[in-house]
Length: 119
Image 1 (tube, rainbow, N blue to C red):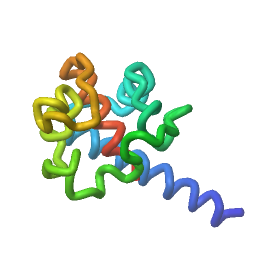
Image 2 (image 1 turned 90 degrees about the horizontal axis):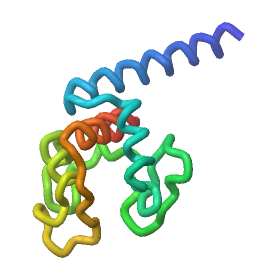
Image 3 (image 1 turned 180 degrees about the vertical axis):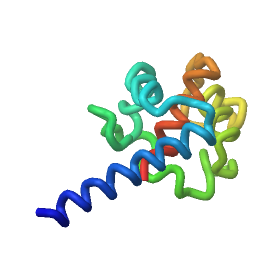
């Protein structure tokens, strides 16, 4: 029983650390990012862990996005590039499959924080 409690504590500490790191890198809020992913309907095209109904098969699976080398098949995976991609993927990669959705900087930062916080 003690080992289960210790494991749960370790998991929660890891999640807390991942959230703080992601929020620091992106300048966003993880909780608001999860809400924004729902608001913008991102799960209709993407699998996104922890987001209800986010089981789309059109776009790439966003599980472990923070561990990838590239975003959108051409950008280095860093918060600045992810934020730019979210705000205007067609400007970054004309003709790509991801549509441009008007998105304020705050929402793009929040979504980035959520995606980077997922281990």
